[in-house]
Figure 1: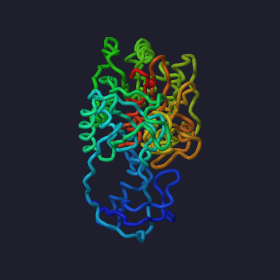
Figure 2 (figure 1 turned 135 degrees about the vertical axis):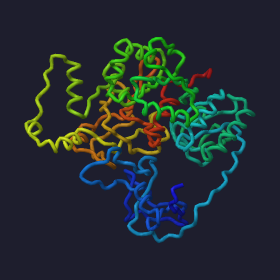
Figure 3 (figure 1 turned 45 degrees about the vertical axis):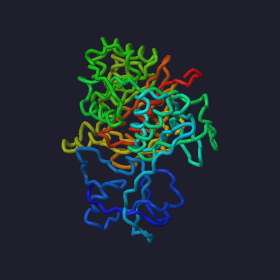
Figure 4 (figure 1 turned 60 degrees about the vertical axis):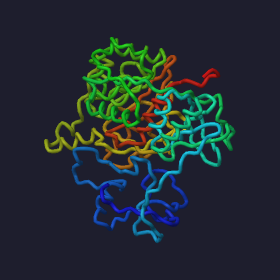
Length: 465
């Protein structure tokens, strides 16, 4: 669509001497059929800007995000070659997907395939009963990741299921597979009692003031793209809403590090959200919503902030008698022209940071990586949950994959959580330190968000289901 020339390779390419864009180790060979994007073309500069891992900046950053690498955002393996590889190429051709064969036992929806969420929601919304595999397995010589959804003919109207599965498979090639037996080559059998029962999520989205309109818009777009219906709940009427109608409640960013939510909802609102989770609901919060949940005791996780002024305000809130320490002398005596530079040292202007991913955890199902890039825009820092699970987290090493990241702030983000889940009674609280669906441009973390909706509840499959 951008007029960039792309061809496909007809042979394997060795990654030796190439610069990998994604973190972690790559394959021994880049297989035939991979895409090659020549940079010596009229749109080569645009292609490089979209695909390069790090962009070069002048002395001042841009007003917006400083990282936008498509391979990092989509978690697609990519390499930069200093010269054109010596391999044959051919034009990219559209190929018609093969029709979905009739299943003898079940239809499978791979958790690691693009388009998974719309297919999964389509089947669940139509009343089909399915479950998610608790671990990877191999069936019919094909590998399927943990979280792959299983819709058996025995538990559903076989004729209706076949028709609906074929219709959805035509819209999302490669997502749906047919199998003839519950017995697998390796991994848990498809009828395993450890499988997670699936239900179509009933979503309530808290919006209106003080929620941030752009954050709400991104969540709405993500839900619409997956075909997930939702109810808009006004924050001012949350106390009167019947929250039992919703299996999931989404609390987006307030552009105020949780302080605006705290002012709007107060202790009574926090207690109501906690009771909602205790009664079986799943609270999904992000950015300022997560900061509020942590500050108000809805979550056990601690929270801190990057900018000194914000952090001092948080500490003052916990201890009203606290006296803030005076800024260092060099800051108080610095030239006026350097104050902007000082502010830049207390913020992260949209950098992509390396996160460790637990692919065995439901929030990590289908992310297809042990490490991935997540966008950080001076988000609250979530401490690792002491009593919960931290499937997406920042490690102790070098975190900066792309963009501007002040070293002092990198140290503050290390060993913190990007996404965590805590059990609360019969329900759960799931927090994202950042915005997993930022502007519709964060497919890797968007999948973790969808995982929170489809797999976030603690609900093992029972014998009657």
